[in-house]
Image (cartoon, rainbow, N blue to C red):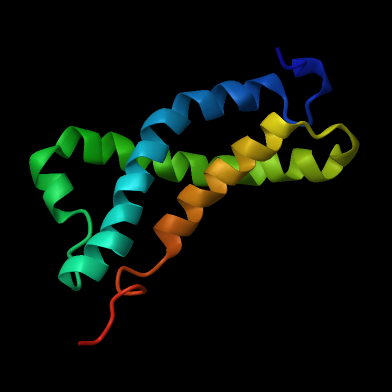
Length: 116
């Protein structure tokens, strides 16, 4: 069991991450799949179009959670930099997961599109 007292990220930020991460990471993984593999297989996509029209509630909650994770990165990064001597592996995993969501959302939809 990890020792939460030796973490660089405070408990209130950990709870916030646990609130946003399940849906936010699932949503960003779906968007990443559409931007990469589906685009490679079928050409340029209207990323998120089918998701929005089939599961609109998941789309809205997912995008809010994903952007909340991106905002979460700001204070978490500050805490990790200031308390760099007490960073745990859980802190690193949380930062990397939130950074994944940020990269996926910042990447242009046509980044992986190839010309045929």
